[in-house]
Length: 377
Image 1: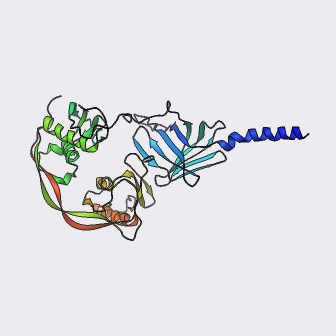
Image 2: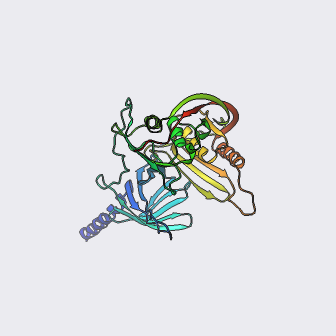
Image 3: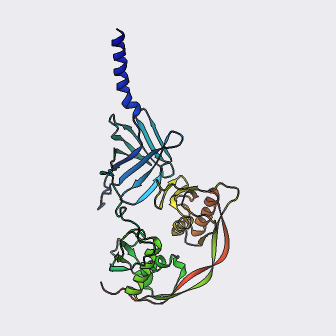
């Protein structure tokens, strides 16, 4: 009898051991199937990669990478209890809830964002099956390299490609809907108000550009800017000089009474990401893996009435959330102006531990002496 009881206990223990030993630490990936909207020409089904690891307190932490868009953001919570799994990002307003399979290889559940729920199955990835971002396997370009674009194709952009898109950390410079003025801003890392002179087409004509460096590896942002400057000289015959001019600016400083922004973890924020959502009368903007100047650059893409400059003294990259009180458009209310947006940004920055100080400051300007339309390919 005792032997039978011991055997039964052993069987029960063996049955429960795999369940207790299971963990969600690892890399999980799956494709989110988004129904194609009527009239849409492309069905975008983003591939998602979740990186999960044990945290110091015994729980879990992690991040999500949109593998096809190159953006990574940390998750705000990761929970695992009795096969139930939850990944959430409260700033971006999404969550995933699912159940871990008995063999620990799949998590089957639902992706929820706003009022939309979509099925999503994640599979535990191996070194061989793990999805990788395009070009992520390339080593960095040598720090002392002085690269140029060996081959560059420039052609007029189509009517639906009128917004500049490019990645300065990619090996190949692939820009769509980009003007010569935008290229000048990239080359000198300045804003539009700092480009002085030039013909009318400088901002009006848009181009698609594909350029291949003559040096192997992924360039740094500085190396890409140097190559864009060389491209402007070689293909647009740009002649320009720089100077200084005083501008009214908003200088970003730290509130001495507020906590410092949270440094980003390169495991979960290995590049710059920015995303926003409407929350009542507020717009919640979360910036991940960004330096303070990069954060200000993102803000200035929306609020262009005033130059923003960094006087925080902070280095490194941070995760920062801004809650900007901008009412949703209403037919009974006048449109929100730049001054309203500026005031809302000042308030949002103060809530996040910063302060904006209005002042005048000399900024570098690029003065166009001569520029031509691009030479033929």
